[in-house]
Figure 1 (spheres, rainbow, N blue to C red):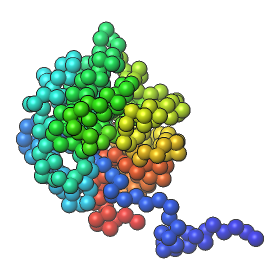
Figure 2: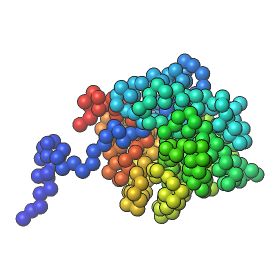
Figure 3: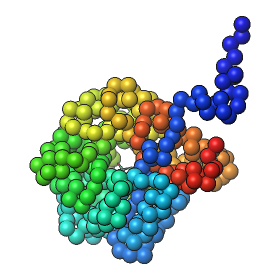
Figure 4: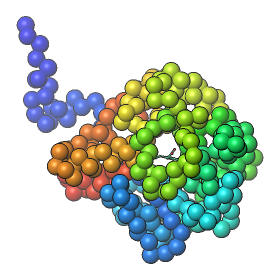
Length: 327
Ligand code: PBG
C-alpha cells in the first residue's frame, strides 16, 4: 500500500487541523529605537519601515501597536556622541532620555511589556559592550556598570532587563543588584547565545554604535560553535535568567532547537536587523513575496522552539493579521 501523506494536506480545513505550530501575536516583541528631543521620526537606511522616534512619536507608535494587539517592546537608545564616554555614565544618569521614555511608556501603557537593552555600546565612546583598556575588553570591571544600568532601568519601570553584552557573570551580578534594590519581580532575558555576527550591521547604523576599533569576537560567540551555547545556557540558568535568547535567529535555528531541548526556560529568538534587511531588499527587487516570506520566517523560529520572538516585522505582522492578509 502506498503511503499518502498528501491526504492530510487536502484542504485548508485539514491542514489547519493538523498544523503543529501556530504563531501568536503574543509571541512577538517589537524593537523600537528612541532618540532625545521632540518631533523626530527618522528613517533608518537599511531598515525600511523602522525609525528612530523621539518621546512624542514613540508614544504614538506604541499606542498604534497596542491597538493592533501587539503589546511587547524592546527599546534601544540612539545617544548623541557628545554624551558618550569610556565608562558609559550617561546610561544611568538621571538626565538619560531613555530612562525617561521607559517611565513615560510604562505610565501610559501599564499593560504593555517593556524590555531594555543592557550593554555599554550605545553609551560608550569606544563603541564596545564592555570597558576598554589598552585594546582589551575588561570583564569584571564592566559588571558594576551593567548593574547600575539595570537598576536605573528597573527604577524607570522596565519589566524585563535584556543584557546583550556577553560579559561572563553578568546575569548573576544584575540579579543580585536588582534583588538588593527590591526589584525581585523584574525579569532577566539573557542574550545567552549571542554570536559575533555580520548581521548586526543595520542596527549599528541605526545607533551609530559600531566599535571604534577591533571587533566583538572576544565576548560574542564564534558562529562555528553550538555546544558552547549549551555551556552559556547552563551558566545563565544557574545565575538566575528567566529567558534564554539566541541571536541571530534565522541563521541559528539549530541553536534555538538545541537550547529548547536542553532547558526548561522559555527560549527567545532575536531576528536581527540584517535578517530583516535581507528580506526587505529581496522583496524590493521583486525577488521574494514579502507577505509570504516574512510570516514563514517568523513561524520557523516558533517551530525551532522559540516562544519569544524579537523582530522588526512585528508591527507588519500585526497589521496583516488585523487586515486578514495572513493565510
Ligand atoms: C548591542 C546590541 C546589538 C544588537 C542588539 N544589542 C549589536 C551588537 O552587539 O553589536 C543587534 C540587534 C540587531 O542587529 O538587530 N549590545
